[in-house]
Length: 294
Image (cartoon, rainbow, N blue to C red):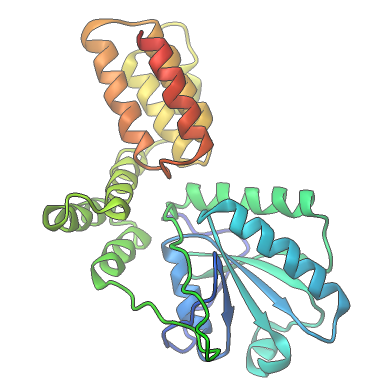
């Protein structure tokens, strides 16, 4: 897997299960920090460092919470109160809050410090998601546990089967990750998370050695083959441009017939499976596919 530019490795911190919060937001402490960071092997994490003593933190926290929940699992918001986290403050040399960073594959990616309008924050996080896709971090966040009545967070233990599969994906062993997801599906064919993981790992196997820019350029040539078109679509979806990849395949489907059309259709279905089935991009592409076919 490609290293994330400008990242700080966080793998040496403690390893304790992370507490959960509500929606797609979790509160982090020093004891649970590393477990939260390790989640970034599966999906992007946005770390928000805040303080009740900083008035700007309240508004920024509300903005990020709204964006995280609106994203419905595309990324996890992890909020950390610096007033209770002196060791982390010292280790990361945090001098002012709010401060927001991304985490991909256990590495820290600086995003911004201070307040930021919602629209700008959304754009910055969008760039983080593209970076995540380019580095094979394609998992979805499960809704975090609700806070119990006594104030304690309800913990959801990690399923070791998924941990193994996503660890393999994070290590760049996409074939191994695909096999691990297939093992899960053999025991439970209806496991939606495993279906997405299997499809994502399969796509990453195909694009692992692919030059994305060259693949797209080749597919844009008038004499491009259907293999060229499928490779470019894989590259686009893997780099976070799912809509472009879907459109490319649907256009090719509308211009072909017979075995070629069926091959393209099956690849499109494989790529649909890498995404949340309720995502608007997927729903739109499915409608467009139906139009192209009928």
